Length: 327
Image 1 (cartoon, rainbow, N blue to C red):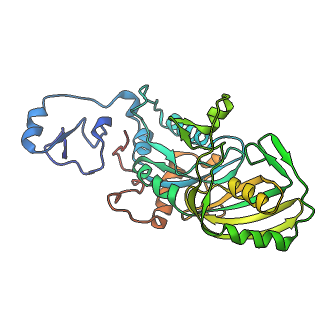
Image 2: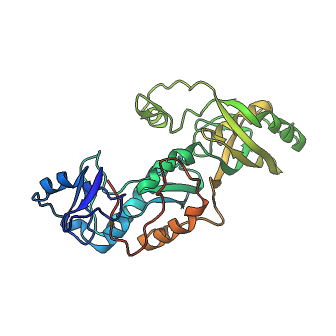
Image 3: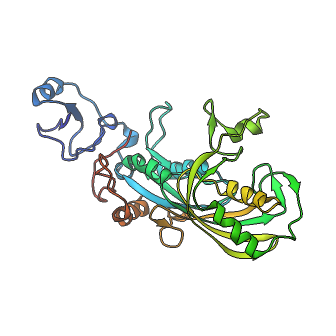
């Protein structure tokens, strides 16, 4: 399928243009045709770019493609952070979201849920960059977790209700370091009940909050690349974890407590790295959530990303490009 500019009989300069948005390229319309003959047949059908999409900032926003990391603070869910970011960008561009759920003005999403009580790196995909989010979800992540011995909760972290308390005075630093060896490598792990996993299209955490009975998901294979004890000040201990996709630090700490003949829960959790993005070097905070800064970040971070078949164009368009990409 080829794209033809309606103002002049020639191929559109940018093959990534999405005709559904009718982006402007020195003309009023773009037609999607297999041949010039088909274009000529459609030439008389005049269409115009919706007025609310005609601004320069709108064109620049819809031309953005790629991945970039934002800082997620404690409190909001990952979905709420994405919604806030999307709302800020659409407002800056003077755009409105489509009313239909299946059609989005701006394609944007995240590459892996971070608990609402956790903070750190949240990878965002925008435009064609959303095609790479599955790679981020399955890829390597690093966390720093503070666990608390002797206390269990229904959510396996400090946000939940305490369900059990046990003594922990018998546990030494050597005991803890020895137990960590059992949780390194390819292991089986039962996901938390309070999680982003779904049953019949609904999140388990939402079902539980609605009072529904939820059975634990079966144990599944996960990978822990590195696991070390950074600090031990009973009842608190700090872990550094590098893991693959589908791994839950909350389940790790819960299982670790059982291994040590007590109970344990996560008191604090920070994602310090996801894919090539680190908390120290690659982070856009809320004050940087604007079109120009994100365009700059996409160009800076593009060389860090792996090249995937079928996803050749994932970087941001130049700032003066007038071709919009979106859906």
